[in-house]
Structures are given as C-alpha cells and as structure tokens.
Amino acid sequence: MDKKAVSLCELLEQIKSALNNALPFSYWIVAEISELKVNYSGHCYLELIEKEETGGTIRAKARATIWASVYRMLQPYFESVTRTRLAAGMKVMIKVTAEFHELYGFSLNISDIEPSFTIGELARQKMEVINRLKSEGVFDMNRELAFPEIPRRIAVISSKTAAGFGDFKDQLIKNPFGYRFNIRLFPAVMQGEEAEQSIISAMDSIYANEDSYDITVMIRGGGSQSDLNCFNSYLLCSNICQFPLPVLTGIGHEQDETIADLVAHTRLKTPTAVAEYLIDCYREVDDAINERSVSLNDLVTERVDDEKEKLNRMLLKLKPAVKGILTNHRRNLQLLGVNLKNHVKQHLLKEVQTTVSRNVRLNSVTREFINNQKHRMDVFEKKKNYLDPFLILKRGYSITYHNGKALKNPGLASKDEIIETRLAEGNLKSKTI
Image (cartoon, rainbow, N blue to C red; front, side):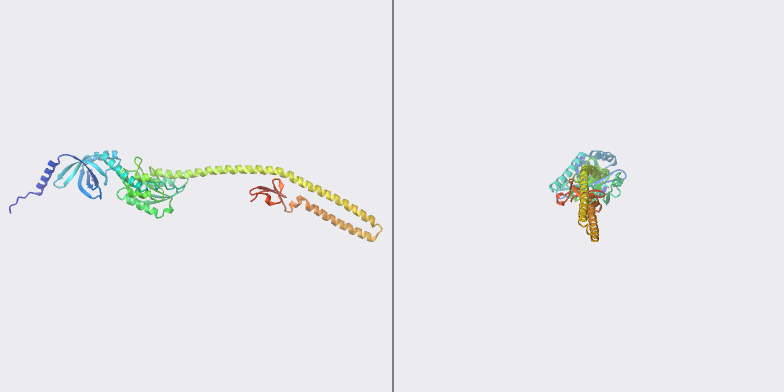
C-alpha cells in the first residue's frame, strides 16, 4: 500500500500558514471573560466565551493571551477609565489577531481593549437589576423601615480580618462620649465569586435572631470596581431590599454607588463614616434629652416660685383673721368670767340675807352652797380653758382654711386646690385630691 504521509508538524505548519493567509488582519470582537490568570512573568492568559442571548448556553470558546509588554499598558489604562480591573464574568470589546502554534494550538492575541464598551455593559447590567427590583416592588422596602432612635445592638457583616471592621469597632467602643454599643460580627467573604452567597448566608444568620438586633451594618475596605461586583448582583440586593432590619452600607468607595448602596436604608462612604453616623444618632437623642431636662427644670422652678408667692399671700391674709378670732374668744371668755363672778356674788348675798336666822344649819348650808359654787366655778374655768383656741390646738386639733376662711365642709374645696391647716406649732399646706 503506497500512501504518502506528512508529519504532524508539517500539517500544523500548513494550518498555521493557511490561517495567516486567510486572517492576516486584526479584528475587534466582543466576548465574555470566563477565566483570567496572570503568571509570574506578567503574561495574562484568558479564556473567552460567547453565550446565547437566551438560556446562557456557551456557543463559542477560545484561549487568548495578552503578552506582558502589552498587559503592562492595557491594564492600567483600562482600570483608570473604568475604575475596575479585568476580571472573570466581565464582557469586553478587544482587538485580536488569530494565531496558531504547532505546540500550543489556536489562540487569540489581544493587542487593545475598548474600556467604554465595558463601562456601558456594566451600566446596562446594573440598570437591568435596578429595573427588575423596581418591577417586583421591593426596591424601596428597606429604606422605608423605621430607623431605631438609638441603634445600640448592631449586627455587622464583614471580613473578620478586614481593617475596615477593626476601624469601625474601635471607633464605636472608644467613642469620647462613653456611649455603649453591642456589636456582633457575622463574618463573610466580601469580594470574589464566593462573596454573594457568603454575605447572604450571614444575612440569614442575622434573620434567624432578628429580635436581638436593631440594625445590620455591611462594611468592607476600599477596592476596585471589580471587587465590588457582588454588591450589584440581583440576588444579594433583593435580600437587602426585603431584609427586616435597616441595612447600612459602608463599602469603602466614594466614586461609584453599587446597587446595594441604592437599596440599603442608609448609605455611608466608609466603615468609619458608618461608626460616626451611629455615634451621631446617640448624640441627637442625648442633646434632645438635655434640652428637655433644662426646659422641665425651668418649668418646675417657675411653678414653685408661683406657689410660694400664693402661699405668702394666703399667710398674710390668714394671720390677721386667726388673730381676730382668738381675740374675740378671749374677750368673750373674760366677759363670761366677770358675769359669772357677779352672779355668784349676788346669789350668795341673797342667800346669806335670807338665812341669817339660821345658825348651824345655815352655816352648813352656806358652806355646802359655797362648795357647790366653787365647783361650778371650776367647771366654768375648765370650760373657758376648753374653749381657748390655743389650748384646743395644743391638744392636737387643727383649723383648715380655704380661700382665707375656715373649711367646714370638704365638698367646698375642688380637686388640686391648695388648703392651709393651722396647728399649735405652725402651718401646713396641702393639695386636695
């Protein structure tokens, strides 16, 4: 059997030659990066794919290379314009040439990139997520939650070793006002392919004990836009929207807002800014309490001064009235005593005149009569003392005055009126109930 064969190398060289002749120029293509690695020498190796518009099935795949001399220029240029690094999952417009090598096979050599395409593509993807959240009616749900007056119990989602979490915690614990915060960390991966599911798992753990926390804080340090891609994902942002606690974000970037920032209850720029915000919440409540305390103190002082003035006016009216009553009682008692003595004298004289002729019996009767009269005098004297107001007060009795007059019927005084009670050793004021 006479067959002429060519070597594998010869065949591959013919393929290489045919490819170079058929595709001698550079071409701009659009593709998605499915893998990206930079080796120790600075060369960047990628796997490019194209998916079907519906279903996401891969319809084309090719290896690609950005040589170190080109990558050193393309990567900084792309990052400065887009504020993100080239990363897996990103859609790009690149300038390529088709190459074939006998050992390494077919690949595309990338010589240029169009960053504006990626910017537009990222913006389009973000807008798709935003529109989907709005159409589902959940976009504003977390921002509509009532924020606690004093957010003291704080659930934090962050990387355990992140400097941003350390700064956040230190600032709260060492705040100059002595406010106390209860902080619990729910560790999560905050960038990369695992970040989305890791953060959602942390949120699920918080949700299981939501009554133990006032708010949830989601923080991380700074990074490139590609590091923040997880915060634009539909699944994570949908969880934030429908989370039962207010979510605060301090993701550590100032130029761009992620969708997580847009749907969170409150967006702050950095972890430190979140801590300052929470301290300010405490201070607002503290200042309000101080203002109310000053107002209340002024009100009480004014009320006390008014009541003192009323009391003094009542005392000025009460003293003359009591003095007049006591004077009248003394005068009446004195008159009663004089009349009594005169009456006794007249009666005694009459009895003596009518019984002169009676000797022993008269003396006996007279002595008995005198003793009886003395007893009556003692009784009258005791009655006089009993009627003396000062002595009455000393025995524990009191006189209550209402509007300057002695109060005889409690029904004459209305609720919350001031009444004054005169005692033997001083006065008391009280309020009716």
